Image 1 (cartoon, helix red, strand yellow):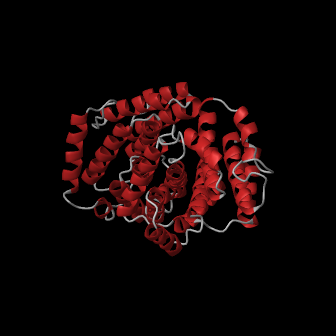
Image 2 (tube, one colour; image 1 turned 45 degrees about the vertical axis):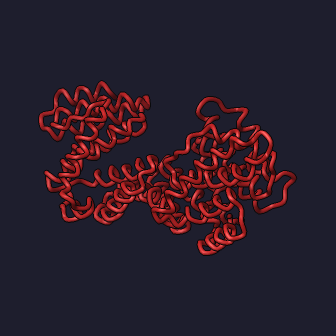
Length: 421
């Protein structure tokens, strides 16, 4: 395939045809070898031919200079107000940049991604139009800022994406992709219960399109928001997980099969009596057996997810020994995640358990972990997150127990209907 594309690039005559060929060249690199770093290098080199220069390793001076240029281009206007009035026209350069954006994100180059956003928005403002490819690019920007804990910028990009989605409904794939990004960003501030249904719809839409990976991402977000909102567990929710397990099994998606089986076992542990409810062992999942069959990053990520769910169970059913063991595991993981709801669920119960156990002999170091969790929820609370405020108050009450502190935490949990807390 690469040889054919290289020949097409050599023989095409128009600039648009060449850009289309370049786009497929990058897509080929991603699909055949998953060499996202190489794809990023190729894409940046191609962009430079069209007057958009982005260094692969930008310095702080370059970042500061380009951010000023970006802000000057907006002229104190909001991003959404700048773009809403522009007509939508096909633009092969933006199609190329959509693939480049994926490469730079997955190759771990956040500064390059930011430069790409700033440069593209300047390009669009100068051109006076944009294609549907720009909307998921901005949506991915909201995704990036979620991971960077930049709530203001994440909200700006998510709001812009949400406003532009109705204008690209004819491009179903980019429309649904954009909605997935919006769901992730909006779950930073909006109640998880209001975001779970859009996540489920994204899953259904991508499934109909045959986009397996994106469909599973949508259902992952749905399940995490469902748990985070404290929604009622029962056979209906478990049946949805069972159906997607069969979907993963039939398509050979082992990692996703493990994840959704884990979710179902977690729900079963909360709903049905078991000998040790803080262990993920039962009809849907066996943690010890699964982990023994995994290596490398698959083992690392699965252990994070299973330990996070087990931490919730250990705290709810008050198993102090398991809480201590799980804290030792979870304190080794970074306090970041591109899925806001998944990070929320992990840090909420990690922080609660850390403050509960830090007074035990040999566990004093857990207090620092609890403080880090508390800091995150304090930041989110100050920015208006309805999900974070009850957790923040609960963490404060566990850190410095008093009747008044617990009363405030209970009232906040009741107000938001967070029965899981």
